Structures are given as C-alpha cells and as structure tokens.
Length: 344
Image 1: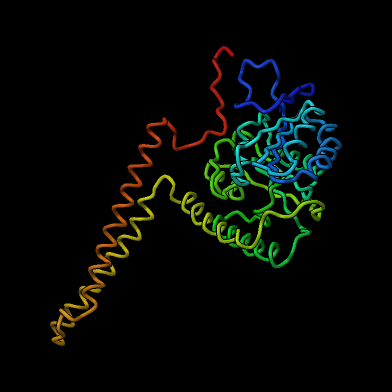
Image 2: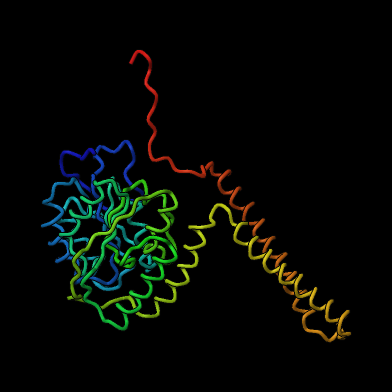
C-alpha cells in the first residue's frame, strides 16, 4: 500500500476529477458527504472531520455534495471550502436524492479509498480510521453497523430491521445494517458499481457480482442535533422495489433468459396441462368445451409463456449488445502475476 507523503491542496469543485497531468498528487482517502438542507450541521461536522481525519495518518480530501439545498448550506460549504484546502464542494442544480448525490461525489473523488457518510452528525468521523483499517486487511468494502441506533422506533428502526433481514436473505450477504451510509470502499470496486434509484444501500450486493470482499464493523450513531430527518416510513416501499432490481441484477444480469425462460416454460407447461384437462373432460364426460373457462386459461398461459421466453431472448440480445459495443468483459480480474523471464 502506498500513501501520498503530504496533504493535498484541493480546490473548488470542478466539472470532472483532476486529470493525469494535474500537479497535485491524488489523495489516499476521499470522504464523500452528501448534504441537503444541513446548514447548521456543516461547521460542527467539519470540526469533527478536522480532529479525526485532517490530523490523521492519511493524505485526504473531503468531498461535500450539495444536493440542491434551499437553506444556508451553500454558504456554509463555501465558508468551509475557503478555510480548508482539503475541502472540495460539488453543487447539484436541484435535489436529485441521496443516491445521485453519492454518485456525484464518487465521480469527483480521487482517493484510492472512498468513505461515504451522512452530513447530519449522526455518523461519527472517529470511526473512519477503523473502517479504513479493516479495508487494509484485504476487504474491498467495509460497512458500518449502527448497533445502538438513536432513531424513532416505528418510523425508522422497525422498517430498517425488517428491510435488513430481507435484503440479507435475498442477497446472501449477512449484513446487519444495509442502510448505514458510513462505509469504506476501494475506489476500483466502487467506481465499477452503477448507482441509480435507491441503490446506494445495495452497493455491497451489486459489488459482490464482481467478486468484492465485504466486511462489517460496529460504528457509533448519535441523535440528530440540528435540522430534521429527510426519510420516513414511505421510503421502505421504494427500498423493497429496488431490492427486486438488485435481486435480478445479482442473479441474472448476464443471463436474463435463464429467468424469463424458466417462467415462460413453467407457464406454458401449465397451459398444456390445462388444455389436456379440457380434452379429458370433453372425451370422458362430454363437457361442452365452448363454455369451459379452462380453455381461456390454457390460451392465456401458453401465450404468456411465449411472451416470457421472447422477453428473455430480447434481454440476451440486449446484454450481448451492451458488452460487445462497449468492449466490456464478462469477468473482473483481481490481479495478474506475470511470468518471469528465464534470465530474471
């Protein structure tokens, strides 16, 4: 592992990350923090980051993403940017949501290690060093676990408990706290993971597709001091819908025909059985076929089966076009040990 020797001077947010010709060395650690209407929390959060990150062992940058705030967050971030050379600010034109804000911050982060956290002071910057330490043990993602969570039980903790168990069961990754934003990632893993919808909480599941090693670490969680929470129980519905997307991506992203074809053949098989039952009723019992609802059921099942198989074939064609047009391999290499020359 190689870390930069000195602190990096990070200027204001630019349209894209610094290019290879930049005179500034890339930092080892990038802390990405999306904020939305958190004006009162910016200064105390930066004070905590200054104690536990700025004076820590890692060359670093702090990337704030203003997700279209309407209070004084913009001015508070501008003030901190002027005070601290390590602060980078990315301002979005409107409120796009937490996943989009995280994606913007990740795109503008230059560190080999990226830590994401909330900007409401409920995550503790003191835990960042421990997360990075677990990452350096050979993990690709280290997820925070808020063992003692200071949130309302009915609107936050109970839905989260149910969702966490469901997500762990579907994904096969036994994490206790999928919703904790405080996580540490290796840059190469995180930047290969597409983000949209509410998928930021499912990054460990999606990254597992490319062979990411995932670990979990208990972290502190503090009561909210300023402002109000932007999340409610209605968010659970969106999370469950995104879970269906993640479940499909994890299992069938490169072979959609396996899913749709299985459903199609099952549906067509039921249609054939239903048709045979209609024929048997006609031949053995003389039942009038024109008034038998099983005929309609047979037709619907057979047609549905054909449609599912067709969707699967279209999905296969789409995926092959995607990989071939962008020259994307269907594998991810962790490392290559080259052969040594005979005279070496």
